[in-house]
Image (cartoon, rainbow, N blue to C red; front, top):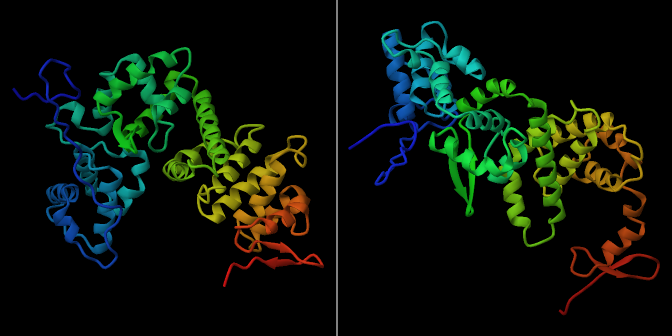
Length: 383
């Protein structure tokens, strides 16, 4: 007996065959104008077939083919979403559809009148999945939408739990959305992570205010990733450093979202600077140097906590501004001057004790012995 269902039936002898979305192309086709991927990719072929049925003919230019590829990529190969996007070609070009995908539920509404009501709009289809969830599963769905990328069970326990969803119930509650494909299970380095597809996440964000405590969820998300990057910095020079480096790269979108909430919350600017400098200590960063420099400038201007020039953050932040975020003129120069001490703290300067100690450590590149007159003499090995 073959049965199709939105979730596992949970009966003896059941063998699951998960039907994945259509394989979606990369975000863009090659810029040489090649349209070969249109015929090879299932998601793009579906978009093209539906476009022909809407327009009578559809022979996209290279630019239109690239836009169509990015539409299918953004919709993650979901057939209903691709069909509804192609239906919008009656009134919009591919680029215009792409520009409006941030509001997928407002855009993808033009389904066939002969289709069941739940398949005429993307919102109706996802509403149906939401209605089939229990109350705790709906609450978890909404709260887990704050994660920008994959997350593990510890993150769910730290961010999504409170009196209405206790930590002791999380393991059983998570199983429901996984069975219903609301959460996609992925395994990396012998650890299980969960990922929420983009359409499902966008729906969860729309539902989050209904469950209350939205501000608390955002705060717990920020605190969790602040603690994670500080732990990574504390274990930087240990055997765990390679694993932390891979983890920080994987968590970069979540860390960026945690940082975004710092300027909006009074008194959290210091926490934001700690997030940036901790991540930068691994050479990862929140984004490129310009983005990190802009974050530091904004957060330093907001950091009015007393004792700014005396705490342990002083040396780390000044060092980060001086070494990790570049030394270019312009905005970067203003950022460095905004930091405590206008640069490196005194004990980190070239002539200070820490500087002398660093040059005198054997085994470091450029390490040497102190020569008469205060100059460092390189250590030479046997010839």
